[in-house]
Length: 263
Image (tube, rainbow, N blue to C red):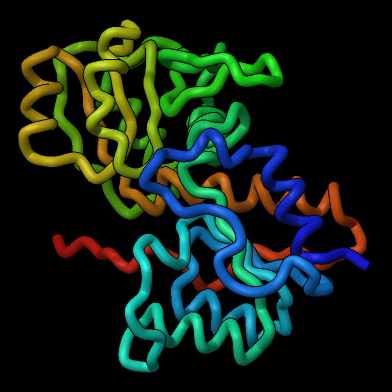
């Protein structure tokens, strides 16, 4: 019988915990390693809606990118979203696993999938470190697209990610060598520039960071935290289906970005 521990062990081979940032919280955050698993639901976030979907479907395991708990909880009550989520998981005997920054840095993780989704060729790691397995790991990826004006690249990004809109700063250069960092990676702008990239696709960009890119002559695109990271979820589901054909694996049909644009 497949167990939560079996799934966790496999995820740890894809995104070893040693790759996570020091502040992060990854792995089994609720439930039991010995729990039998027949149904696995995947979502970017372990929020109340996705957890309710898992419960309604009869899932035994919820696999997410973001962690259920970042900091020690002082109370588990129905007065907070996290509290309600944990109570729901426990009451329906659902275990919760996440792979966060370890999946960001994994050779085939969040940013590799983001680069693939945007159609980049010759994908490489920016500022790579070699893993014990002999693979390059690192946070950012870069790759090439046929040279085009930024005005042509923007609808390509929006279309491939399915995001409702983009924020961007134009650096005055055509797009050819593109860096990507899913989620809040704008602090890595200098590394993307040093790698020779003319364009950087990421999320959660602050006002001054757009000006930094503008001053560098670099195109900076904010496509949204959810939309730049979510492509890894169906890719991860595909891997789990291949590894564990005895389990039903489903990507959440209800979880999406809560942010909206008013124009």
